Amino acid sequence: MKRYWTPGLGAHLVRHPSTAWVLVHAGWRLRRDQWWRHAPFLPLAPASYWDFRIVTAMGSDAQRMTPEAMVDAAKWSLRQRVGR
Image (cartoon, rainbow, N blue to C red; front, side):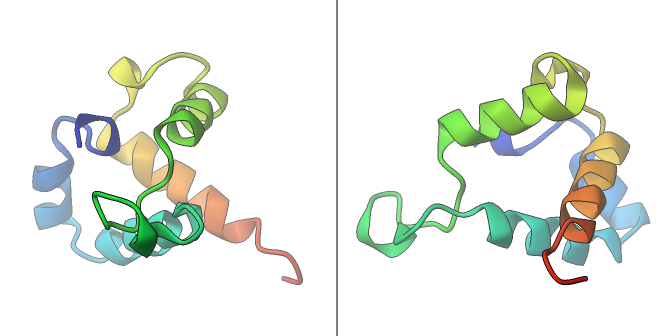
């Protein structure tokens, strides 16, 4: 679970609750196919794909990812929808 969470994200969501929907929506789009068939039976992105997305978003690992950067990356991801 550590890879899907960044320090300070909980406090950020308390201060800015509207950003929770952005993170949930972006996370839903990143889920693996047929997630319900494999443990842990959660709609999470595969670890390798998540690591790839962090590197492409941040240029390095998640150590530098702030809650604001996570929200910005989620907003960017949602703007990339085909047909918009």
